[in-house]
Amino acid sequence: MKLIITKDHEEMSQKAAEIFSNQIKSNPKSILGLATGGTPERMYELLVNLNKSGINDWSGITTFNLDEYIGIEADHSVSYRTYMNENLFSKININLANTHVPKGTGDIELNCKKYDEAILAKGGIDLQVLGIGENAHIAFNEPGSPENGGTSIVNLTESTIQANSRYFKSINDVPKTAITMGIGSILKARKIILLASGVKKAQAIKDMIEGPMTDKVPASFLQKHNDLTIIVDQAAASLLKRT
Ligand code: GLP
Image (tube, rainbow, N blue to C red):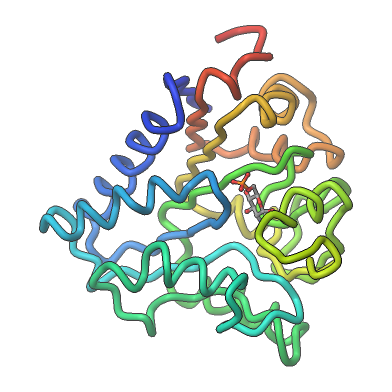
């Protein structure tokens, strides 16, 4: 595990964008695993700029997103598909047919099965970016999730519903379930970067890095991965004993 502590969210985003940019340059047909949330928004902005200035060509890139709410149509304003279209896909030269976000409507069991198969058929994810929840969830794998699980349907905890309610009109509108890549699916990525910013994430970062591997702290299972880079700002690193 490699830990990079940055001054702030901006520097964290720059380091993350640089890793993605280098991946795309070294393999223009990369399979990229993408995340939503506030944390990677600036990284996406930087990647848009790198595409516009001709440094990165996304025409051969394939993407798989981590998760989606259940019961929210893809074209809904708060869906993760809309987030990706607005923050990245509509602003770069990617072929939309090569972008994948789990489908939160229709036959969800079937969607789960097909999602893992689709990742496998492409040869697996080369580089995966993750955020982290305040309770150390990754994607939507809440505490108690199995370490080797594939894409599945999950119940969201009150803390996640609360944290994500900022995107909805009212907390009652936040879906209580989601479809998410499992921890097992995520661990198969060849390289993983995890980003965190702000003091609200400090306890989760401490538990993930310095605590035991346990399903109470889903992100702690990342300790098993052999190519993991954690990029956090000083506030998110503030509870770490060793820096
Ligand atoms: C959601 C997403 C996660 C994300 C987390 C943290 O629950 N499913 O993938 O990591 O939020 O989001 P933020 O970056 O906004 O703090």
